[in-house]
Image (cartoon, rainbow, N blue to C red):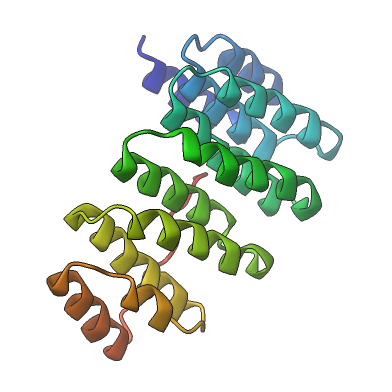
Length: 198
């Protein structure tokens, strides 16, 4: 069974059978998928277990030898905490993710990881400006079409939640992506942060 399948199995069990979901998550050998699965179990766990399980999920993410996976996997733990009402516990993990993103050598991957983290914390307005600034800062150092597309999507996400997307739009280096962002904002096209648990 692949790690993807094992993660999905743990996620399915998380809503209905906590002990089985936790056992399934802990059996996953790949740290990236184990961290995601443990965060999913935490999201649906009894209140008393949420923080402990997120600590375990964070440890799995940080055990990865891949800098991108180490940062991006934290997104699931962040969203689990926020959806369970633990925003104070999310703050140090968020700060760590932003700091650790600097170790991702591939600049496009750095932008991608930060955007996943930004989407994870987006439901909580207290995190939005810092998350957006981190993505914009990384993208400015990455003059690629993919980074511009990410900024386009971020601008729409900012606009969709009532913020001012002008600083994000101004940072888009690719003219086509900038025009798309401006047009879609004018047309009030919405872009919602991704779902992490289903």
